[in-house]
Image (cartoon, rainbow, N blue to C red; front, side, top):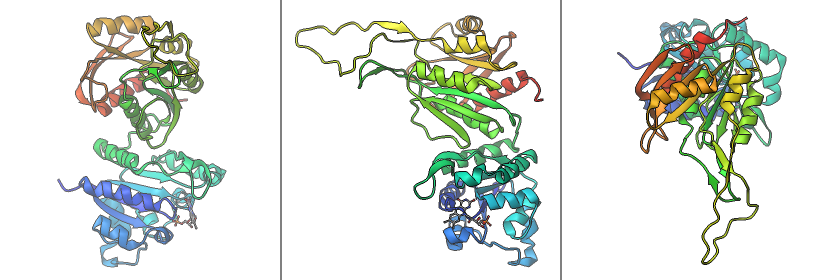
Length: 403
Ligand SMILES: Cc1cc2nc3c(=O)[nH]c(=O)nc-3n(C[C@H](O)[C@H](O)[C@H](O)COP(=O)(O)O)c2cc1C
């Protein structure tokens, strides 16, 4: 089998320079990348850079190498097309089927998955014209990644920022691995919690846990790639923001509860992958607790934290909402998992065995997903992404049909 063929369309936004990093990652991981910039894109990054980094010729228009019919062949041959950055102008053209340069022609001839990574000022993104064009592209089956919130060109901040190129690379890798865009969560809102809560004792110390957040982030990435609108409530995870995901950072269990309850009001599914502390220190010392000569430390009195999973599963603010919990067990894994599933009242419980070297911080996981209907789905040892996919498969089966 030859190398997977990727078309990297680059339109004329300031984020074009970040697409160089995406291109590098794609070529270094064995993809054959054909960069198709627009004329405007070349104002930001020149053809020499695209050509040298990709190892392929670069043209913006249909009149070069006409004997090879590039306006048709490039799109036909592609395994995936990603337009990054996608300008407001480019999405308008794509939504209306214009074909006045090589990239727009390529978009009309591609029959493979097509991804747009828009980047622009907030006003341009929020304009009804842009939003309608995005909706049109999505309706036709393209994956349009929600831009991130953050620093834009100049001093402005807001929604419209280009996602981390490493995360865009992950989206492309995933789509190629699946062979399609698999948009079975399109039109759905899902909430995922990730990471581990930290319960402060004083301004410098906390009670925490070993959760890295990698499983929750894998769940968020997977849901976004399957077309969902994703809110990721992230507790102390030092990980890069997944592309197209709305990240809400939190610290403690109480903050996590608030953020999850707020986001789940209109959610189709809530997946609680975060490791939430059961207890927190009953008092918080406003100044750093000092050691005193000759004195033993004072015991730490703990109080219970709210049981967020049981609360969400009991309330179900949206009818038909699917609620998924995670249980990390050290022994008697399945029996404890089944008991927890019943106690919490959730639809699915992902049970995994944890220990010093198992699960926490690693890239792999092994689990059994228990269903309230008695089902048991073993997920063999493998990447956290595979477990994430299985969870969404099981969630999708349980979701009421989209009205
Ligand atoms: C400095 C500068 C930065 C720009 N950044 C963006 C941007 O981030 N997103 C966008 O949609 N348009 C941006 N534009 C406007 C586009 O370049 C303009 O709409 C152009 O016609 C797009 O052409 P294309 O879609 O064929 O690449 C920018 C323009 C300039 C001068």
